Amino acid sequence: MPNYYDVDAILAEEELVPCSTNFDFSYLAHLDPDLHGTGKHYLPEGSRVKLPLWALDKWASLDFVNIGIPRHYQRKARERLEAAPSEVNLRKRNERYFMAGRFLVDLIETSVQKVSKSAASSRRDRLEQVALEAKKLRNTLLKTYTGERLRQTLDWSLSSVGDDVTSYTNQLTEMERRLFQSGAVAATANLRWRVHGKSRWLIRSQTDNNNTRPPKNARPVTPETEQQENDNKRQKR
Amino acid sequence: MSSRLGKQNAIELSSFRSAFLADDSLVTIIPDFDYSHDIPLMSASTKVGPFRAGIPTEVPLWFALMLQQRSLCSLKVLDWLATENLTRVKQHETTQTTLTPTTSTTTSTTTTTNDSDDTTTLPFYYAELGQRFVSAKSHSQAAQAPKASRLLLQDIAQVRLDKLRQQFQQLTRQQMANPSICVAVPGIASAELATLKPLITQALNDQRFLATSAAADAAVKKKQPVEDSIVESQSQEESVSGNNNNNTLRSRIRRLRG
Image (cartoon, rainbow over all chains, first blue to last red; front, top):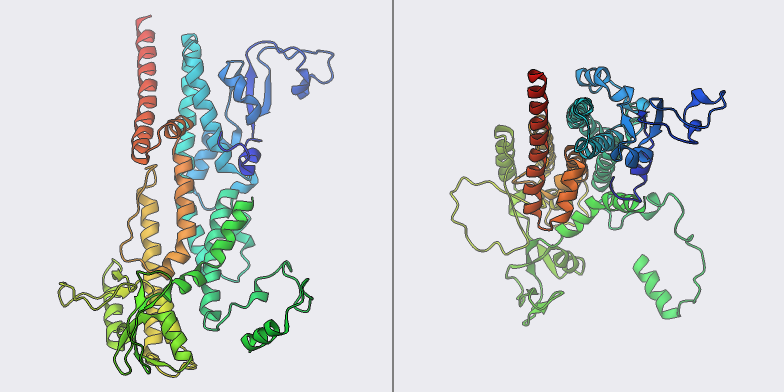
């Protein structure tokens, strides 16, 4: 889990992960929606609940729960992703697909490492399987991110200056959108320099979209002396 | 969030900033005045030498433009903007897969190099300087490059950008599993750098983020020197996978036994 204040990381850790409890949890029945009607206060052993990543961090390493992998990171979804990387709409599954995937993989690997040291052999096999799935997930994430999607993002960002590209960016996750934006801003800046760079001053009003500067006719707090006014008039000419 | 906005503002002005830095390149002028002392610019080490009317002198471009505005000198046309030179460069670009090497124009160019006659080089700021000297209407009367140079410059810029894009795409096909990539782009120029750098550095950072594990990250943070950390993270990853292999082997042996 990286930078504590990183907003993207916080939102990515909201990813719900299915897990099953290893023993009864007292007074936590509200976590399982199936138990709402019954009068039970405790969460029985082996019940499957979905919890976000940030909640599972400590429980997984203390061996309170067994972590599973969410459906859109499992084998079928991965194979579909590897087959056609640029057509899959990853934003629909999770806006921060890659970040959440990586945090999930980290969580599984660290918890499996800690738990395997003192676990029965049968459990260890199951943990190994989960860890292997996690490793494959990491490879898939890396390959998808740096493959066709990256090439397409590069091409689109550099060549579509001034066009409406929402049809393309609607399919991109947050990380890819950040990439697209840096490329597009740089390309736009280059075009703006090529068109306007020959004039002597950068035309400030075109970049000031939020009216952050005071209007031209505003009177300054301390009035300029006559000498300064004459100098300014000469410079503006 | 604010750092992201700050970075975006930096990217928005990157082309203008590189144009500003390009004005530091040395050009030859023919001054119309005499001044027998050195003029220090900004620091004592960089100075513009004594001027004698009619003798060509080398000064930074911003100084030359300032003098020209006050009608104190006339700029000589940059020799790399000549049509023959640019056609040669364009030939090189379209036939070779590597970029034409770029040279720095902020140091004095009066020293001769020992290269063979066949070297074609471009200045690092060729796009910025080209734009300043080649324009549709000549607002600064002298020192305009020929009209043909404008089209040649545009063609050269286009070809180079395409080459860089293809090179990056090839990189994404080959090297992406490696968490410590070092990309060498010899001969890249300032305009292409300003356009491509934000996206490529962000992409490589993200690739590193996805390729490393948390254990490797923790190991990296403990060790300060960069080379050690890269070696450490790689060895850490190998040792983790090594442990997994041993565990599966042991469990398989146990199952075989009984």
